[in-house]
Image 1: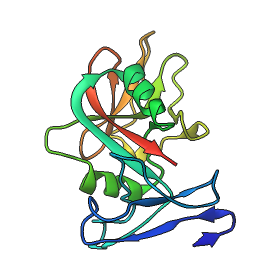
Image 2: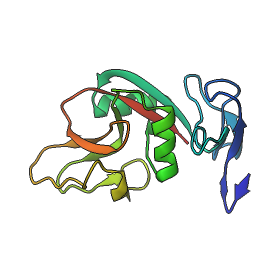
Image 3: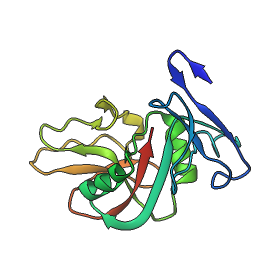
Length: 170
């Protein structure tokens, strides 16, 4: 399905982890299979929908062994980046599909002075305030922080800890 230069592929399965997982490849201008260990998810589990319409594939690393730079480097091995959460439906999809109790995931935002709160891998689009756990943090120091998804909302943590992460291929 293509609408005004933006295409998506339809995935209809009983289980998001089974069946062919496809996404819209802008470089191929067609639907192609997600790489091994990646799955689609956009729409599945949200509002009881079994349809997944997507132009992205996701890979979740649950082992808490990576800092921000290591996680991004691993994603780039697959030509992917740390995930960007663009809207409330995608936030809900990540909560229902990729969130595991007591897991925290690194996502695609790192801040350092002068503290711009943006998605690094999505044209530096500002992060929507409704995604934060409480209010958007205001830092007045010289440290680096990265954005962490805690299963329900986003929060910044100092860049000296290891967590799991979500890669996104689009």
